[in-house]
Length: 294
Image (tube, rainbow, N blue to C red; front, top):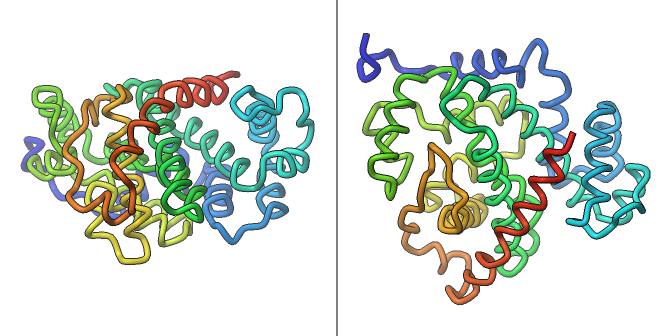
């Protein structure tokens, strides 16, 4: 059976794929619980710290990142409680979410045509850009914007499991004509959308619906429910800035045109975008470096 004639991918198959790469079901560890707590803006510092503390490796990584030059607290953060005092719950939540993404990505992308470091760099850059944009236009969304940006392409790892042949066709097509919307190219090959794959798993993780909808519509924020539209638009704009500053990878090699009305929806002046773009490469390098340290 050729890729274009393969049977449609069901949500049940997507959930099975999540189990296969170790982020759902047997062998899942604490990832679903961690992500549910960290992505819920209602979670208190104590609740997040309790969950992080149950995973010694993750706790150690959070402390290492908290002591990095990126957060300007080198050598002064010895406990998770201190990390919350020094950095705030949103920063610690973002650090731990990035560490979880790093774990899942390395596990899922081994022996794949997608270069792991490039995908992680793209994810971190979109998270950083989305947070920066939110701090100017919708400050209350800054923490959610970082996590939504970080996780926006999580579904690609699931595509590799459930629709690999068609995804390879998509990657080839994007390489030949990179200034295309990846979701439109996926549809043209009948490939299951990476946004849909992510949304199926995020709902199984019990993540907030605003975040699920934002990630599920980051290529088309106008299609998101009203309560998630601005968050989706922040990720969409951040994704574009990330790609324009050279943070692409196989599934998103270059920027595509920004959806009309995005800047107006967010109330952001185009002149501000250059400030975000100028700072993004260094912010991305530093955060990815400290997240990647063993």
